Image (cartoon, rainbow, N blue to C red):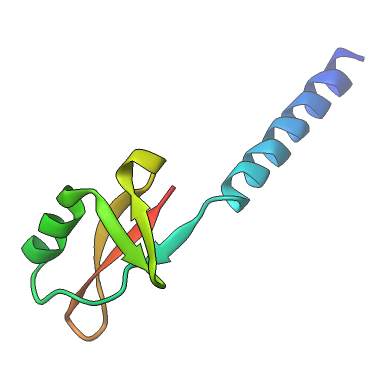
Length: 79
């Protein structure tokens, strides 16, 4: 009986973890950067624009700089 309850609890925990990550938001900011430093400078500013919408760090958005296949750097924001 205890084993069954433990397995059920573990299954529900794993399912809950999957549901939490499924609701994460990830967007690529409009524009590109020639250097990672340029991307980081805008990221440190804390205000981003994606699809014409202003996204702010105060609203829980975080950022990272990813290098594209074209060699340019693109800011990805997520929360």
